[in-house]
Image: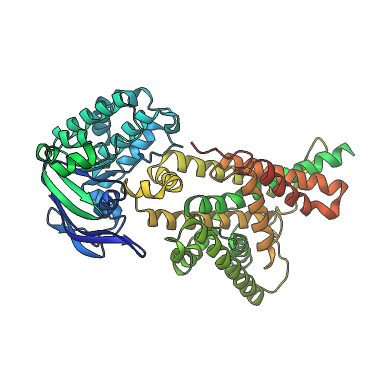
Length: 233
Length: 292
């Protein structure tokens, strides 16, 4: 469903991506792992249209995303949970979720969708009238994911969903991601927590210095020598 | 003496509500787009002239004509935004503020001079049949038009508050103000939201200008005065708080009037003194919410 081919991108004089190619199939859970500064977040920004490639192409169901503004890309079915969640702290939990369903397509089924999100994250329903800024770190992350799901994405991009969470919450978070994926939502997961990401993902890419240096099933990469020595110690 | 004090307090409240309404447009635009439009006072001036001419040439009642002068300002605001400010919108916040100051000062001067050419430097008021009518409460004289203006200013602020709190678009505006990139990721067309906010700010200036013209007077050079008052109120009230803006406006109006009793030559200095004090002591504004 999603295909990146030979994508180059960067900021001003700094080139970050050097010809990235990757794809995510319908309903797949794909991980993108690599060290800090390798270009993981930049790759997600490219897919969401926040940054445009200088060369190469991004396609979603065969349609080029190169000229689409970011809000159109959400409408087409790609939602991103940015690093740190970036929830609207000054608004209530429920308002955050409502905003997630801003697109015309999502707004029609807002009510059912919200029920589903509350089922996934009962904590959010308990706190729905609370200001989002008062939530704990784990709850904020849940809200960020719930908010992205409100847009009814076909593909969910997750940027470091486990970052800053206590170990026990990290485990819950990964279970949650799996559950979402089982609801027929494809997931592209960017993670620092390489072992957990590779265990969860059906396929994974390893990115270094803006280039894809490894690709395979999660299990295969887990036993891949360079990955082991670099990330798993 | 007590009546004099009460009279000036009331005058302060009446003008303060207009300060609040003038400032809320500036505050909305700045809060959402990070454009500091120092030509906001000139927009208000144009709103005042719009209702003056509507009344003088066509006999349109200034209160009834508020929607018309707002509509005129929607068009002017739209042109201003598309031609000038929209070019800044992708810059980093600090550059946006700096550049918008330059553009705003320039536009302010241009609009002021156009108004001078077209309509002379004369100070003009709208003289409706009810213009001079007053009623008296406990010895304090209240002009009908100014009291009506106060009520209308309240209604506008309340309506804006409801719009921003309750409607989908209003929530999108607030979301964009807080984190435009996250708003984009919700599928919100933030450039559309920027344009809408700017135009809404201009429309509010149009309404405020009408109320100023009907309760006081208009002249081409009034813009800077109102921009300055709006900036003081904006700093006092804190960005993003409509209630804060209203209270800030009232405080400024009342303090100025009170100062006028004792130190009439320095009434405008008082506002600036408050401005500096607030910046020193509480830079997020008296009512500004803290981040978090």
